[in-house]
Structure formats: C-alpha cells, structure tokens
Length: 241
Image 1 (cartoon, rainbow, N blue to C red):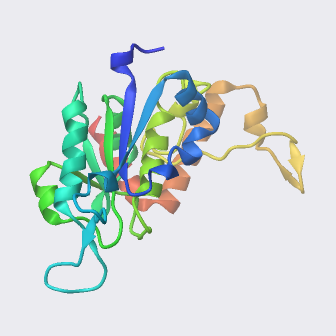
Image 2: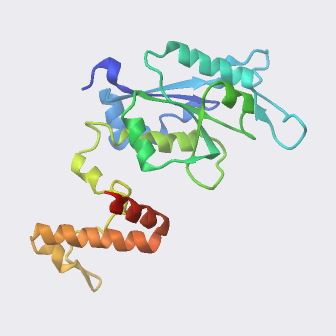
C-alpha cells in the first residue's frame, strides 16, 4: 500500500455529493477504495452559499434561458479545497466544450497526486471562475449530460483502474484499446464452437508469436475500419519512431 502522502486522491465539488462514490463503490474501484489505494472526498457546493436561501445560481447576464452557477460560491468552494492541499492537483471542470478526454490524459492524471473535479449544472458556470482559477475544461464527448457528476465518475474510474494494485493483472491493461494507439483485438473464450462459429485456430495453436502477430493485425484492421482518426495518428506516430 502506498504511503498516505502518496495516495491518489480525488475531490469532487457537486450540488449532489450523495451521488458519490456511486458505481465506484463496487468491483475493483470499490475494493481499492476500501483498501486505501485511492481516496475520495466530496464537497457540497451549496454549503458555500452566502445567503439564507443557500443560493448557488442566478439568471445569465444578458438574458436567456436557464441559470448559471455563481462564481463567488464556486470560488469559495475551490479556494477551500486548494487551501487544504498538501500537493496541488489539477483542477478540472467537466464541460461539453472542454478538450476530449483521452487515454494519454488519463495516464498523466494517474501519474499525478490526484484531481479536483467541478461538476456543473444548469447552463454551466460563470466564465470568470474559469479565468481566475486556472481550471482545465474536459469533455467526455460531443453530447450533453444533466450535470458533471456522471462525467466525473467516468473520469475517476478511468484513472483508478490504472493505479498500482487495483487491476488483477497489470498486463491486461497493456492490451486494451488506446493503450498502444489501437483499438483492442477481438476476444474469444470457451466453448471453442458456438452457434456454428469457431474460435480462430491460431488462438488455439499454442504458438505465442503467431498469436501476437494475429492480434496486432486484427487490432490494426479494426482501428483502420472503425476509427480512421486513430488510425491516421497511429500511422504517423509509428513512422516517427
């Protein structure tokens, strides 16, 4: 088990802290959380509201639909977390206009001390908060969620499963999609024949060199067909090595 000062730690700022750990309380992530391989703290944004109604939002300046999270309330929450940090962690706002989250960014987050995640709601957060607190905007994709909580769970799950001691076999992480710039090759198991379809003979041959070549060729073909954007980047990077 890592020393307390080196444990990967996530702090989530949310209007709905009861949503955590949610699915991260189960399976590998849940066991790792119980074992102290990573830590999770939730912060209720509403607890930093300054009026008796505990208001956290206001109408958008200039008019328009919906409400916007106030910068004074969010800044108070962010600054409180920042003031308690022994080691500065990346401050991330889950936002549909952010940079797409990729496996490389996940790996860099894994290698750091942890993350502080801001979960937006309504029409988002006041731009001045993003400008004054050096906040990184991250997106899961080109779609809209009701809030940032589900995105925060996804980001944490992607990182936690890479932490030392969490996965059953570290070797399995090296063969996954995106780990080497390719989508993963097809997987098969028992029975050898099922509904008229057989496991490819090479996988039953015992020839590990042939199996590795077959799997790489399959991964390349699937990536070329399904994700031409990944394939183009893979080709460029492979030629550059």
